[in-house]
Amino acid sequence: MRTEPRATASSAAACSAPLRTADQGGRIPRSFDFDAKPNIDPATIHTLASCEWIKKSRPLCLIGDSGTGKSHMLIALGTEAAMKGYRVRYTLATKLVNELVEAADEKQLNKTIACYGRVDLLCIDELGYMELDRHGAELLFQVLTEHEEKNSVAIVSNESFGGWTKTFTDPRLCADIVDRLTFGGNLIQTGTDSYSLAITQARAAAQDGKAG
Image (tube, rainbow, N blue to C red; front, top):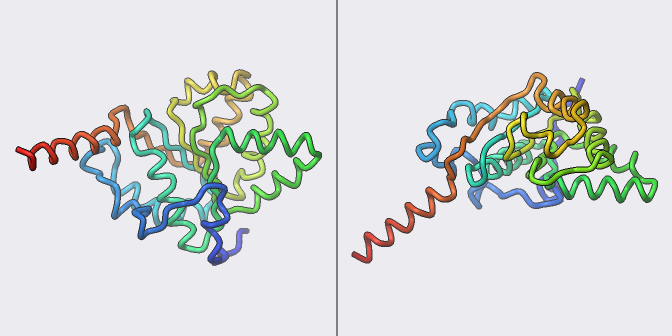
């Protein structure tokens, strides 16, 4: 059974990419415009922000097109978890796989996988943006297996699960990875309408209004 989260000031700082703090707009309740994304249920996001899913070692998948707010929510939820004392690490999928490949070459793979296994929440961004060879996919699978039912993994992808065979070209391995990331977990679909584009257009319209 997992012990209570260990509070540490370096929780967010230890991530391979920094998580935004609350003052920088990282906390979803203060920074995300749910009106611009009506298909996302605010109650679901606020429930996730309570971090109970991390306490229960459940996975989280954020799926949707580019610009729909997936990474924003991933970083914000990771920040919320770090602020609550959970050990959090953020990485891009390609960076993680490259790190694992290098570790394998240097005979440090077990040590690297164990390092990732010690965090309470591993945030993997941009999964599915690039094809992975079988070796890279197998290494990523090892990290996910290390986390299964012991720690939480949250991923962001611009591909639906049916399209993951473009990233993981081995159908069986692809199915196993999807199973690891969905069993007992949460799925948030952010849709196809670009949140980033909507915000940019709204700002431009406001500026035009002032100029007029």
